[in-house]
Image 1 (cartoon, rainbow, N blue to C red):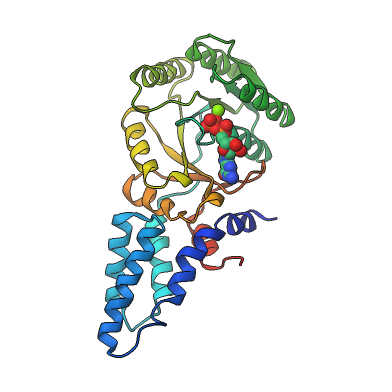
Image 2: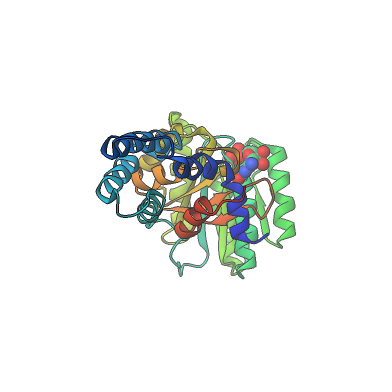
Amino acid sequence: MSVFERLRVGLRRTAEQLVGRIDGLSAGHSGDPAAAAIETLDDLEGILLEADIGVTATARLLEVARGQAGHADLRTVVKAELLRLLEPSGPAPLNEARPRVVLVVGVNGTGKTTTVGRLARLLTLSGDRLVICAADTFRAAAVEQLEVWAHRVDADFVRARPGADPAAVVFDAITAGKARGRDVVLVDTAGRLHTRANLMDELDKIRRVAGRAVPGAPHETLLVLDATVGQNGLAQARAFLETAGVTGIVLTKLDGTAKGGIAVAIATELGVPIRYVGVGEQLDDLVPFSPAEYVDALFEPVW
Ligand SMILES: Nc1nc2c(ncn2[C@@H]2O[C@H](COP(=O)(O)OP(=O)(O)O)[C@@H](O)[C@H]2O)c(=O)[nH]1
Ligand SMILES: [Mg+2]
């Protein structure tokens, strides 16, 4: 399957709920055209909110749809505006730092470790030489899984001993990356709740130590959000944005929800770019985010 195919299959349920229902709109309305138009907009509002695209984007789309009524079909109008709303997202701009340090953060179970493994594969395919750092000292099984993935892509692997200071492990990994001339140091961190001050302090320490090991590090901090938790993810994200220096979002498990519109809410309400999306259980189910592909996948679904 191509990357776009993966995205289409992963977004299937959202496409059904969102575009499938928009296509069905106005079919049931008859009589006075003005009244039918208002009914259609009311229905559209419900559909958009249920797909979790958020209040900001919903208001914007309704405004545009109202202005265009009668001139273009709703599908075309919504598609164009969604694309515009998602525009700021996409892959990170090229960073010349060597090694480039990428931190992966978020709450437990969102898909951090999986993301590190998949990202390692993507970066390796594009020619980067990696160090993978397991700074999660709590989950032994996950560390072993990550080590298997690291070997598979021929990356160096630096792990924390149980009870070790995660910041010290990150420092070791970056030092190793510098010594061996690696391109990227990819750091998997322990799951943390934004409400737990000690864990957020630990993350802060990791960031400071990284910056001491190589100037400007961490160069990217990816917050992993689980798409299936919907609007709760936004509250989570806001807390991390304030304290963790997040530069990009990885939105996982889009395949597990009909509320994949959350990508639009993230883009419009958080002001942080979505860099990658997770669309399945396989190792190659992490896809660099492209607004155009995301919108096309929604509007040209596989049924
Ligand atoms: N369906 C699906 N499952 C995913 C995706 N990303 C991660 N997962 C699953 O989510 C679970 C938790 O992932 P893990 O990486 O251990 O989360 P962590 O606690 O944040 O490190 C695992 O069972 C993963 O297979 C995705 O894009 N789609
Ligand atoms: Mg993990």
